[in-house]
Amino acid sequence: MPLASPAVPFSYNRVIIALLLLLLITLTVINFWVMQQQRRSIMAELESRTAVELEQTATFMTEPLLRQRFAEVEMFIQHWSANNPEVVRFAAYTPHGYLLTVFERPAVSPHLLVREKRIELAGRHLLTLELVRDYGELEQILAQLRNRLLLTSLLIAGALGVALWWIFRWLAIRPLEQEVLRRLRAEEELAATNRLLEQRVEERTREIAGLLEQEKQLRRDNLASYEEVVFTFVGMIEQRDTYTAGHTQRVAYYSRRIAREMGLDSEEIYRLYRAASLHDIGKIATPDAVLLKPGKLDELERDLIKLHVVAGYEMLVNVEMYRDLAEIILRHHEHYDGSGYPDGLQGEEIPLPARILGVADSFDAMTTNRIYKPRMGAEGALALLQKHSGGQFDPAVVAAAVRVLDLVADPEVLAEDSDDERFCAGHRGLCLITDTPIKDLEEKRLSYFFSDHLTGLYNEDYLKVMLYNNQEAFTYRCLHHLHLQGLAAYNRHEGWEKGNRLLKEFAAELRRNFADNLLFRVYGNDFIIVCRRCRALVGEDLQAFASLQGTGIEVVCHQLELAPGQQYTIDKRERVVLHPESTP
Image (cartoon, rainbow, N blue to C red; front, side, top):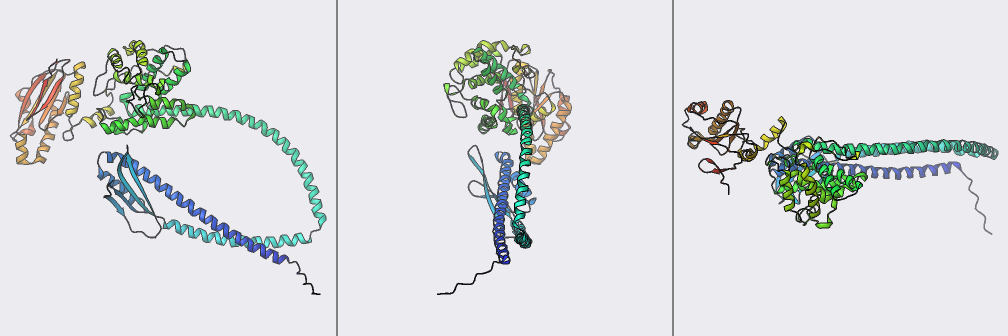
């Protein structure tokens, strides 16, 4: 019969060593996992930051690209890259793959992050950006962190090993009676704790009820604050573009009158009123070069301005208190015949409040002065609405507008005629129906778009605007046309640089001698003086230009008396010729 193997005596030391080894393995695994998570987190943050920087760079480059000012793009890339030492390479490529500009510096490590960004606007590919970053410094930081974690793990394992040895030793010599006594004391403590917890639950219940009430009040305050912020955005738009000051209030007022005439209930009218007050909030995303342009827009600029309805919709649709307004704002430029934007909806597909808002918006645009056109009277605007009834506008809405908007022909007597306090938004914009500049800042903006770049005088575009607007206002009565005869020969003999300098000096003399008049350079060597009162220019006036002495250039003057209601045509031949248009 085989002998039984001797029993192996139980050893606490072996158990402690085994637990210590298990602890070391666990800490090693945890360290490895922590390092991996740390690496992923750092790389994710680096990639996110790179993406954000590329997105911001793309945003800053959009306006210079639209103006074909690639020098500003190159300067931006060089300056930005020089201030970011971790950038190894930053390049810009055209849509056809040609290198526009590049910034490079030697890489100090093999750890490189490469990202690309396409700059697109309105479906057009403008530029591709390539950014290469060196994240070797991050790798060094991770290596140092790994070493510290390893050292910490060894210290923790040693300390826990010693603690485990003492714990096992202590448990081995403690009698079972001590365990029973501890359990009895624990039960008594648990009963006392339960009684205390019941009291605290009651107190907490009362506190939670108070907090819920505070939370409701806080939500109401937040909604009020958010609405104040949104209307602040509307005010910011009007401050950016003072030519449209008061527009939103007038459109809200007109929309409410039309809706009430059509029999909409009070809640629907109030919803339309609020949507009309916010209908242009998306213009906060419209570039200043487009929003502030005082003349007519080209095709690309019109496409950019059309994006404001989508921008306004996206700003409001995710906010519960404005969600029901977002759809109205999105659709107020849709046309009844399907020719509108953004989706070409037609007829009943367009919400009725949006159709009403579209009519009110157009009526205000027609009855408001612009720098490039005078305002139309209410009668003429309503006639134009009727002309496009069934096309751009809903016939039923136009019919209601004709019945109620003829009463606002005299803006000075506009008054709120409702007892509903929700509509008491004030009347600061209802009587301001002009978009002509009234401040120095607006005059500077006018000069930005309508100045001759060489002389600083007004250009031909503004002369056309002034002559058009003068038909109705008739502020200016006389026009003097000065032609510099012999300037072409002077340029050939002396050079264009001297010719340009002479033109600047001549323009400066015009400012000194005719300071109270409008001065224009319209066609190379032609200048126009527009006066409020007629007076003839005598020989002394023409000989007073010191800049022309000894140059062989003579001033040929032609005077034209302006007439009210008369439109003038500018012809460009060897010299500019202004003549009145014949009326049919």
